[in-house]
Length: 477
Image (cartoon, rainbow, N blue to C red; front, side):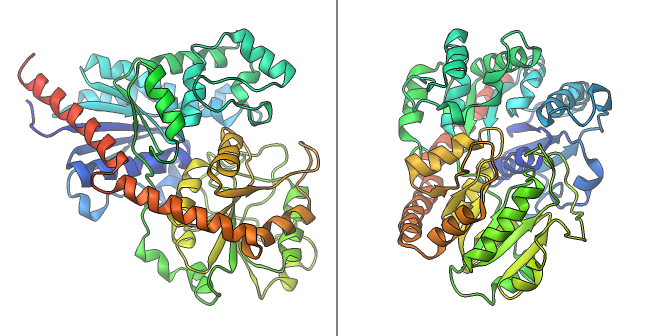
């Protein structure tokens, strides 16, 4: 039985940084295109995810948005705590494929198109089985996408030389990637199964009907122009897609505290849903915030040694109530100008508050987009994945942030450096200049999403492709 309404299926891989942008894309397809959308969620922590409101369909979506949590996948057999979170994600998604195929096969109205993220490219075979359009959604920027796609074209010897000699890696038509901003995958041996899987995923991406990117033309004009000119796969910048402000959060104690603070006087400190610091680094950060003499809201997690992404797959809101990893007396000395928040905060609502004057961030792309959309200048402190690339772009190209620097590349960022950057962003002229630039970017983002804007038009193109495909299937062609 056929329907005249386009039905889009989206697959979200584990981790809040993957799930949130996929859900926002789904809501956008419902609200702007009136499409039927089903989101399939792969998760490693079902219990914690069930305690959030993320899996609840918005009231205004009617019956157009369904969110399906796929069965729990046990990956305990792949190794112990030393296994990377990326390996866990890849394995979990791969083992979820039979459940995804089963769910799609049972649908009365099967999807017109399947949209997956970087970790879900194995699901594209299911799209082929059911004559669905295939799209990949990159919840990051166009420069990151360009680096990935160039893996197929660059001689592996160039990558090895880039790593060995620490020279920039040339990306056709785009900014080169410096050694210190490198992706971890480039350090892998070419015969490593994980590296080969990465290349296979990129190859599958290049053969799809299009790649959606959470950016917009005016933010990355040079890179997007190069991608369109050099790649065969169509590129659709549709961002910024960010979670909207929820009015229910305004009874939150954090918001209540911010209501009492002067305009643009508070630095918000958060390392995203997965970022963690060592015990030494937590202490240095505490001292830096105290020495800055500025107001702060700090989303605090217990330290984890040698794992910057220690909580990426953990969605719980628990905390270490002892706080014995903070400097002695810190809580007493900063009680009048600082607020510590265990594990999680309503970030969009915090960033939208007028008392926030800066954001010390790990430069995850979701956080970056939320900061720009709310007009908040950033202090860039990247931790893992493509975050060093993001920090480089924000600081060197876009002018939306300043960068923290360790004395040595592997050393903790010192308290004096932290004191300086916090004061720069909140007090000094440099912060005012960045705030002015952020205001321009905020306006640019709003224009891109408005009717007739670049991202609005890109999304309309994708929608038209889906509608035409549905008509073609209905006619039996």
